[in-house]
Length: 287
Image 1 (cartoon, rainbow, N blue to C red):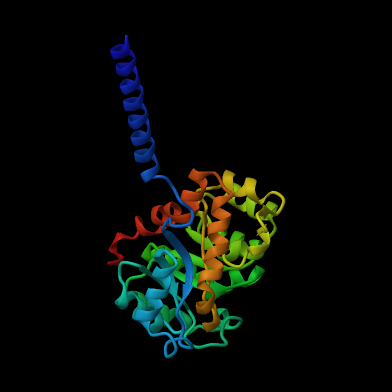
Image 2: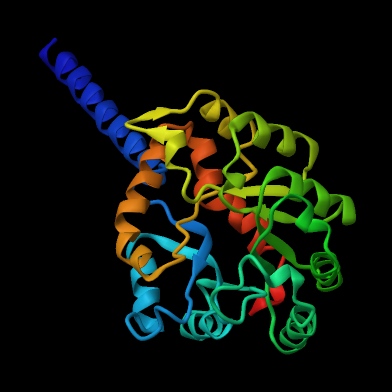
């Protein structure tokens, strides 16, 4: 009788060990918002930061906060190339129309932008043209129309900082245009939702949208929007001035907190998978 009880005890103990092992193996590959790799859709490395933060240091800073891939543009384009040469595995080059500071509101009237872009595109490889700034009917100007056609010719995405009206105008020029919408246009959730519903080649980065997630709570409608269009959003920091390079940890902390409050599969897509699926895999020639 004692032998029988001992055998049962040993069997139960063995089963408990097996259950622990199975549970541990399942958790080993579990998604962790605190450590998951990040695809960043909006990094700038412009001339005002080159001396203070050399390219190798900039790459180390991005890697330190978990960024494994990033769409990078700069004013001038030399910054993008510096960062790409420092880490071609991390950097996905994006070509800006800006050759100097102070042209964000005038570039669309400058006809020399087009030959400049054509020259760069003939010499180097990029994943997109942008980030460039527009509002409303400016998207219908000849220079902008030519940029849209250049993107189509070279099979590139467009990284557009604009309102919803400008996005609609660009898509009317090229219904197949692939657009990353910077900051989701700073538009309200219902406007973003409508555009994503109507245009399946439109994605949005969430840089500078802290108002949509504050103190563990989403702005009304935004959690549902991120879930419903979980394949259309990407994270982004936007280092548009040197000081932003000093806030990488702070901004990434907010982004990872946002991920924690979303379903796991949604968080995975927004953190990494969308950028890889939409940008990296479609532009294999970049390396």
